Length: 255
Image 1: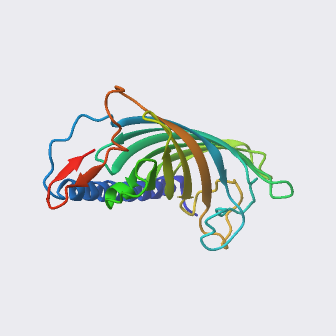
Image 2 (image 1 turned 30 degrees about the vertical axis):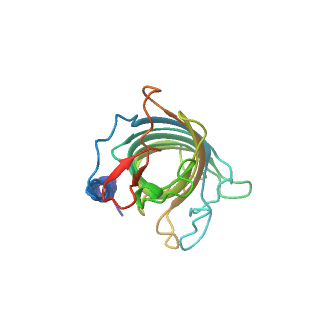
């Protein structure tokens, strides 16, 4: 049987490896963007943003990837109220580093193996803005799609699990996602995001006994949010600041 010490060590190793890959990936993309052509001096930009979100996380019995429902040994409700706050810093025009806190009440569906999890997540991650990355100009004044990677620690507070006393504990996780932003005005964006979160085989988000059929548990998540640009209203947001190339010139300018 896997000891708690071994479990914590494996969680830490998975999180460390995933985060190292994220940081290296972000550094490579940022460096490539900064070396593309000769640039004129970039003006001062607002790089900090705070975002408030609501949505749901869910899991259901299933094999394979099950991207829309996740995978557990019980079945959660489709809607499990979830609230989160993100802070993002744009390290370049196409890469943002972020930290986030998530709170969700995961609960079994009627008729499924019972559980309730007052679930919290603490994440570090990175957003890659695709239109900026590939110099796409179509709709870039209002639409800004992205892919996201993240890792961190979760706290599960489990109750109402048959044959198990109530309790709580920390465990690692990592995940991928995709979404898009819609520009409402110079200071506010709306966004919609899909996440898929992975845990190692020892973690049981639903508190059920481990089964050989389901090696790992995963959660699917969907959220919508509003993001507020911080800083002076005289400065443009780095999320929406665009670079364009003069016809017949190798130099980049910013608009």
